[in-house]
Image (cartoon, rainbow, N blue to C red; front, side):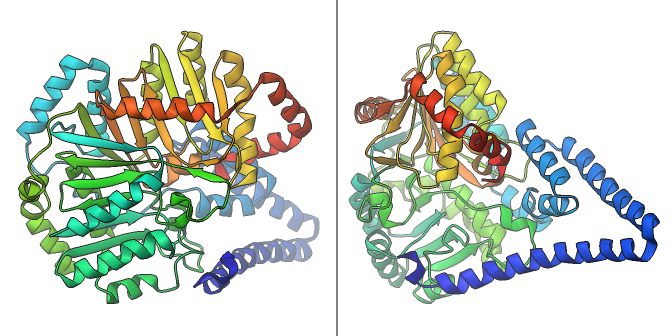
Length: 529
């Protein structure tokens, strides 16, 4: 049970301290307004009402002028007026997407190629000839995410992470120079313990091993002070955005990315974390369906740069920061050690890993999804564990279905979060009415995030279809065009549908009739889940 996992109770105490602090602020406000009321009689009451009204109106004006999606803004407006002053406080500490100027500057250091890259320019021209739509998506990603499109890259698709586990261990054993890991969740067990033994051995051999994990993501799984413990083992570790018992808007932004880079020429990514349920060594919600990809070649550079940007932004070691800046062109590019891996693979389509930051007012992940929806002519296959979408994405799906596109959406049947699961189901009706075929994975929980457009373009990564993932978390994905692995992804998708249950409209209507008001409340609370 998670209650007995290392560090759980210590972190639970921190959470309770955070809650007490927040309640303390609310109680203080109530006391102040009560004093105004008692001290001023009817005049005091009017003053209190006036102050409350002014605060709520000010926040309403501010919220309406943010760049957040309409549904997100409306939900916060409802909360601000439902809980006077308290709702405004919740917005300040739970809604904003902020980081400090130093972090923004360091994150930007690796967002653009360090110099003009003629290889990428040639690849862009080749992509334009093959697929103009894909070239447009790629250009957008390079502008907003910083990493260019690559050839001389191979991508291997693993339908379940169980199949990727041994290849991960095998590639780790081959590492000679550096290993970079960045994950949302780390949990001691078969998967992580097996990897950690290799990481310790490699660190002892002089390999540069660095690890970033998210503190809230690993709140109940990783032991307390785990970063210090791993660093003492030789695995240089940063715990991203440590959970503090303080009201702090930065606590809202989490590192949800999944990156494992080896020697600059090999990388694993996908939807998986470093925990046993992802390889079905622990059963939590039935069979866990997630995927992974293995990238080799030039495109790994994008993931390397993403990791180094995070390391620099969160490192307290100024000397290490300076060394990374000085040596990055020489040490971390895929060209440096590729000969040890047998040279660059033959080009197999076009590959572009990309990142999505919550601090730049640009919803990169959502934009890529919508572009793929709009580009579909024949088929669009989508998989996500959560479906909490805004009107723009919902209307894009409906419009594609109206055009005659065969749209299929795969969702979990066994939920990991019941409220989110029920909220996701509330979105089925309008989509199915337009012709979208909705399936639920009967054996268990689907955690993969994958879009496949016409069997030609695809993206796979960490970006869920919910507000937190699309707008508040640090995420990553891999955009592909013309890669042979897309056929493997499509084949796996259709085989998975055979194990799944297609939701009928009559069935959905019965769910809606039983849970109409519950769904209505969840819709309002959707952006907070």
